[in-house]
Length: 326
Image (cartoon, one colour):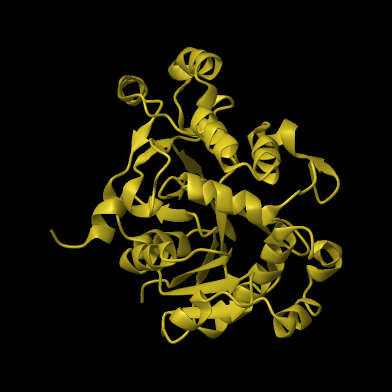
């Protein structure tokens, strides 16, 4: 029998884009989605909770009480009200138990602005092959989206250009990459957000647990981990001005450090912090100008050159699948 894989994500303010997120992952073979709604009054909860292939869980007092019984609580508990990543880690640990109850073999942890993608087309086949491997957890490298305009309603349907992970770029492109980073402000640095991929965990071993939001580990002993070439993550980060504004208005005036200890700017560059500051001022036009200058590449000549060089990749399949039969 083919392996069964599920997805867990923590989300807020997804709106209609959530339908595309669910539709894509069900279309490519994921058996179930565990969705944790960071806002317990999110209207999407009632809209989707009747679905048999989705478990919708509100971040309410029941969930918070469940967090306190988890292995990761000792580390994450002190940060639950100021670090969304702390809540994500706790939710993933809960989803691991729920996924086992649903008979799932693997659980992939991604965000609501991400899609799993495999050139083979079927995620179930990817995880079926992984089931015969010795690995406890598998990392999928990520691509980061390049918005070409600031008005985008559904990024999963409308955006198809992406920057590959540096690990996926061949060495001969290094000089071109450095020149682009020097001359194109939207690509300085190459990625504005994380670049270490997202992971799936084998559920047959109960000693495995989330290790941050990008990895899993065995609570005691060595973890058998690998990077899979069979799939990757498409990260539709802040695609469209409204998505950008909503993200940073929701995050508010967060710290320059993750968990009060890890400096953000040296890790991923200054875009995240600059975006926080410009949105915090409440001037939408200033924020839009920043977004256009630092995120949007609208020059078709530049886009064509970057694509021809191999610095950008185009993925049209999500848009085609979500559009349905023509």
